[in-house]
Length: 172
Image (cartoon, rainbow, N blue to C red; front, side):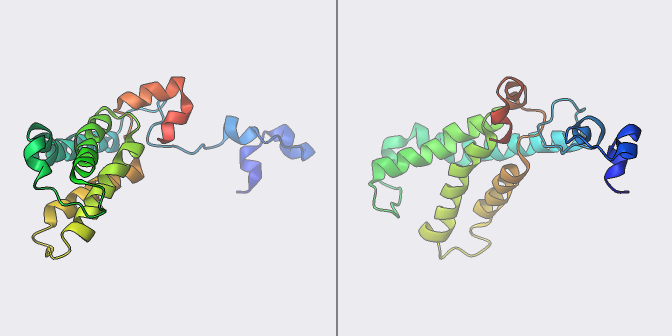
């Protein structure tokens, strides 16, 4: 089937074709945040992945760093020489604030970037001596958050509703 499958019969006879004929009649590309389609198992799975990944990151790393900030200043490694205060502040941003955005499904893809950067830095620069077994939690979180980056938040997200009003938010 060629382009004729997407054209009206009258358009096929005359050879005249409007570019918007595909939009009205043919298949359209779907993203994980299309709001006009019903919720699927993939949407539930993405919501589950967002919730569990963020709760793990918050409970194991984010909240302890936030609650014991001054103690953590003496413990945190500074791989880029920015100073322990700035390094810890950026880690708290990536491990506390970004997961909140991801759980809510607001600016999800954008919020995964600091988390992925922090995890990559910890695995590659801070702890290069870790075996796969020692770094498995970080590797699993890298897999979880890179999946969220690729797939987006799904339809069960607050950002899905906001993207109706501001369409540019759909891809962030």
